[in-house]
Each structure stands twice: as C-alpha cells, then as structure tokens.
Image (tube, chains in turn orange, blue):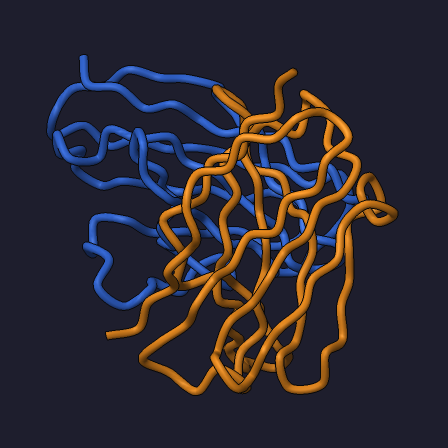
Length: 124
Length: 106
C-alpha cells in the first residue's frame, strides 16, 4: 500500500543539526512532490517546505529557509529534511507528506498521504 | 503569506448534530482550499481538496463548500469517531494552515 515511513525519535542539543528521513513505497516516487510540515506541542500545523523528486526543485518557508535543506534519493525512494542550528522552539513533531494534484480548470495541490511523524526534542 | 482564520476555535456538539466549521482567507484563493482531520496523537488526514472534492475513503457525511475567501466544512451527522481537530489549508500560494478547530462530543 501507499505509505511514507519516517525515521525515529531525535533528541538534540541547541545548535546541533537533525536529519529526518521519509521512505516512500507503493507509488512512483518521482511522480509526486514531498512536503514537510511540523507541529510544536499543543500547536497547529506549520508548512516547512516542499521538494519535487523529479527535478529536485525546492521551496521553503521564509521563516526557516536559511536553516533547512530538503533532498531526495530517487534510488531508494527516500526524502530527507535537514534542519540546522537547532533551537528549543524547533521542538516539534515533523511530518512528511505526499503532494498530489488534481486538475479541474487548473491544478489543485493537496497532501494525501502522511508519514506518522518524527519527534524532535531540542534541549540542553 | 495568506492568512487563514478558522472559527470557532473549539466546539462541542452531540452525536447526530450537523456541525459547520468556517475558514476565511485574507485574500481570494479561488477554490484552492483543503481540509484535514487530525485525531490526537495521529498525523493529519485529508478530508476535502479543491474546496469541495471528497477524498477517496472519507465518509460522505463530510462536505466542503466555498470559493474566494469564505469556506465551510460540514459534518452532516456527527459521529463519536469525528472527535478531532480540523484544519483548513490553502494551496493558492505559499502553503498556510488555519489555526485549527477542536471538535468534541457533548
């Protein structure tokens, strides 16, 4: 079945980096974008950025664009999110999601398959 | 960035009730509006895309309407398993989410 499997819990100190993986299966990885979303404890959803595995094109949220890098490895159908210079307020659940599109007089994008999430805790 | 505002922030309703959640964009987004359901401790789940298209496998009691700046998610007959937080999300430009609406059973 179509699924995204994310890597496990991460505990980091302030100033460190974290790299989360998201392995896709059950569909043609190159044909769909991958979006990353995070959720701080008790808070709402925050879009971080997206990447197209087809051509590597990326876009990032302005708030974190100088600290985040999204990549993909099409040989293993895996997407990666690296966040650098971690701060305590980066503590959150991090989700990857498949970006799908529907055409109806224009393209409509949505996230139809989600990973279970990766908990990242940043604490000294 | 486009700001999305949901109302109410929380609501309590009885099983069988008709429930409506509203989402407003601060500029027109046509129908580039999606709705997600997030149950406690789980990842979000897509309910509606393109403002009104029901995602495959989602019960037909969920429906979405709206265009431009004003959108609604309706649950026609609330079920116990619908307890969750609901988020709207616009895909017209840089993705943004509403702040969420927490739905409880009375």
